[in-house]
Amino acid sequence: MADAPASAWARQGTAPDGTGFIRAGSGAPVLFIHGVGMNAAIWQPQIERMAGNWDVIAIDMLGHGRSPLPPPSPELADYADQAIRLLDHLGLDKVSVVGHSMGALVAQELALRAPQRVRGIVSLNAVFRRPPELAEAVRQRAAALTGQGDAAGTAQTIARWFGDPVPAELEAAAGKTAAALSAVDPEGYARTYRLFARADGDHAERLQTLAVPALFMTGSEDRNSSPAMSAALARLAPHGRCIVLAGERHMMAVAAPDLTTRRIVGFLEAAEQGDGTVTSGFDSGDFRRALGSFLTGVTIVTTIGPEGEPRGFTANSFTSVSLDPPLVLVCIAHKALGHPVFATSKSFAINILNEDQKAASGIFASKAADKFASVAWRPGQTGSPLLDGSVASFDCDMERLVDAGDHSILIGRVRDFEHNSSQPLGYCRGAYVAPGLSQEALAAAQPGTDVGAILENGGRVLFLETADGFELPRGRGLGSASDGKSLRGLLTAKAVEAQLGFLFAVWDDAGNSARTHVYYRGTFDVPASSDRGIRLVDIDVIGDLKIVDPAVRSMLARYVRECTQDAFGVYVGNEMEGEVRPLGKAPVSAASYTGDHR
Image (cartoon, rainbow, N blue to C red; front, top):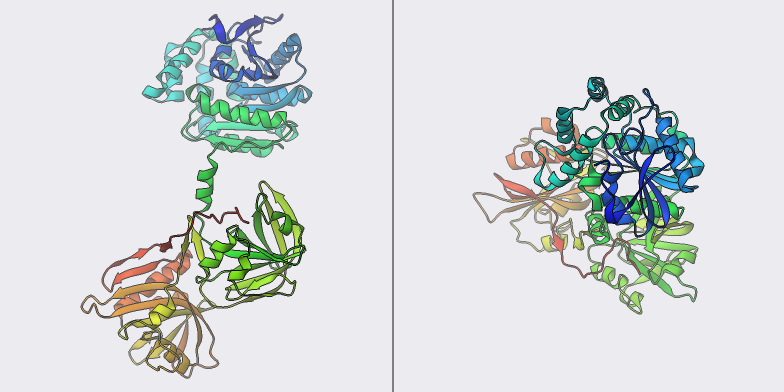
């Protein structure tokens, strides 16, 4: 393997000091440095894929390929100096450097010793501060080397790098790697491996001075050059980034050449352009769908345009930023038609929609000529439109405009706000969601429906104390304040001001399917007195209460558990068995609310 011709894909050369190398292509120069036991030809996949746009040079490290032996007790500086001599011989003032394993240590040493010669480095499967058990295993392997060759050791190395047995799809890559290991000079291998065994911490105190962009990339299944090592290196390097390739092992440059080379090229192109950003390498549409998994509310953001006209767009990229000062933010795409207006505005308003405003959401996400013709609105303190019926609105002065990728972030200082207890409109995975069962529909339900509520205030739940124990407020139907048998009538009689929120449980009596039980979560204002049998109970002691109805007792046990986990579901079934179901979804148009706003 060491003397194999480079054939059509590259040409071989020898520097005055005896260093062997392979060179191919033209363009910006890139130096490749292999790991222990390999040689320059191991980079054939990268050379073939990059030679069309890059001047690719692959070096035979000291003691490997056609290069001379290193000193008996070498240091990383000996290998870095060899690389510098080669660059001088080739007349290259500055290069990017890609190193694998031991070669990654040499690449780092080169960039630290001669930063003026390096544009950026890619450290593939680099080692760093091995944990004690791994360090001991490497030291034992190094101590066992005799400089006489070791066929059994080669087999063990292949098993460590590719698996035992080697998967069928990796047999060709494993065979190429085994051929390189078998051809290496045993003494050169032994001297280099002994250095490799002890040099994993040589750069720990120096990486903070690494002046060039650096990418540290490894495979998720590489136990010897682990993802944790690459992440630690990237953290120390001022311009460091880490990428972990899922499912790959130590020889990923040979086993997965397309993926590995694509990531290398993406980084090198960014470094050549002076941009330290590493390209994502994933499908933007799939990324958008993943973002859509986050359940959000839906807002309409409004302002007044330069001609005094109201302008607005639909967004779910809204969040609070600060309480003091009161700051919120929302995002708008650069390509949005309204971007120039909002980017230059001195104020804007964010209207959080209720579940009856789906139509407005769709209109403001469209290119309709007069979006405001379909909604009732009024000017807020800043003059920005506030939509009637919104769950909440925040009238803001523009605090700051931040450019972020293909969007702008509008950070607003809240000048005024308002809110109410209506149900918010949700959005997730391209569809609207309505977490609360329509209370209007429930009000018209058959009289036999048992409607109750778990009402909370400040970590306490409202109960009614009876001669038989404790029970939640409930009534026949939702009803009205004047209907004493309904839930609303009961709460009115008890002087409890309650705000019903999301649906929490629905079940039927197993023996009497005509009777349905519906319970909401909600909040309440603490009544002035508890003379009406009202008791406020801390959530963590609900389990100690005497509650006669076993179905309600079971429901409350779930409520306490989900309060602890801060994760709520909706129970549907009967008093004996059922399931906690996910939120329902309603169809929606193809318009997306992850930032593509107008």
